[in-house]
Length: 115
Image (cartoon, rainbow, N blue to C red; front, side):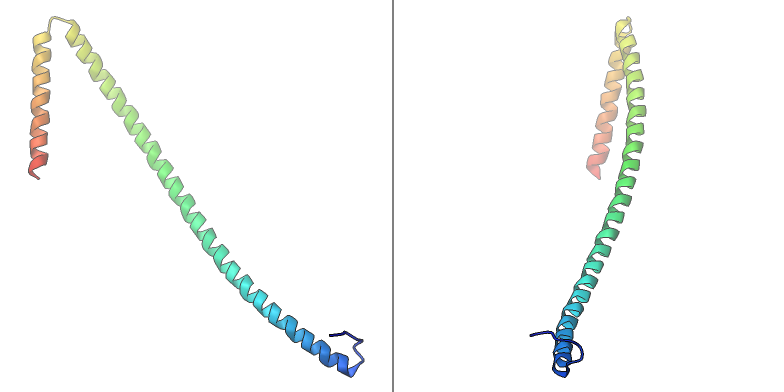
């Protein structure tokens, strides 16, 4: 179609037809823009949720690290005491302690197995 000046009657009708064609494209663009806006909003909320979850997981890992550090310190102190006991002439006491530990282990195992 040819575009002429606005004063021409035939051109005005042609211009109106062209406008309606652009109107269809604008409506489609608006629809696609709204669809894109919805998808971006969903991705934004998902990324915010992921960020929150990552913060919670990092906090939990930090707490676990602290727990493991304290447990490692306690275990190190216990092993130090066992070394001190094994170096001395108290091997009989060490054997009793080991037998008691095995007994406690089997009792706990037996209790868990019954459940």
